[in-house]
Each structure stands twice: as structure tokens, then as C-alpha cells.
Image (cartoon, rainbow, N blue to C red):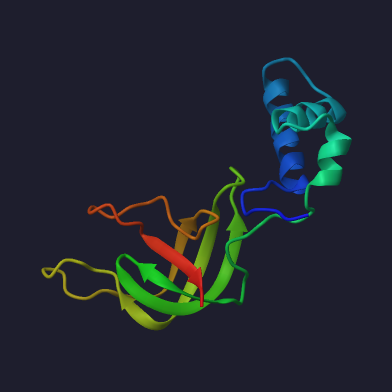
Length: 147
């Protein structure tokens, strides 16, 4: 069986069930863990939790791995570097990535300010390695790909 990068994992569905339980508890309608898992499975199109659990991969898809060589653009400047950190965010669709560039990158587009170099940056990216944050001209802050 093959999975695409947007296929949720069993772990991500468990996290959704935990969030659902917390939400329902705040609203005064507590839910058991089993009932939460069943509801989340139904939301994702599965007959029940056992079917979902058997069908889904155990691991969460990630755009890159810590220690992996990457290349791309940051604020419009090309770079090559290494992934120093990667954290899955609460929405289960985005990652905070820390990249150390091989050579410092000028992150200033203003001629008035002069060059501002960074060698290590943190950005929020999706599974495709593209940040939702954009520069004033509409370009993503970071476009990341495996080297």
C-alpha cells in the first residue's frame, strides 16, 4: 500500500481525538477516548477506529529530516544547508524547521539598510516545504527541497 504526503498517520488521528476530547470537556459534554477515536475515524471516512488504525501508517510524513541536506530559497535568496531541527506544529499540517545555511544569506532587500546576513533561520513550512508566510511581492519566505 502506498501513502501520499497528505495521508494522516494513526498518531495524528490520535492527536485529533485528544483535542476533540479536550474541546468537548470544555463545552460540558465529556467524551471517552474510545468514542473520540470512533468520531475522528468517521470524519476521515473510515468505518470505525479499528479500520482506520489498520489502514494508516504509524509514522507522520515529514517534508525533511533532521540532519538532511537541503537547498532552496529564503527571502528570494538561493541557499544550501542542513536541517538542524524539525517540529510538527499543533495543526498537524505544518512544521517549524531550523536550517543552517552553508554560507550566510543576505536577508535584506532594502538598499537603504545594506546587507543583513543570516546563517541559521527558523521558518514554518508545509509538507511541500513551502512557507505560508509571504514577502511583500507574494513569494513564500522559504521554499525548501531535498538536496
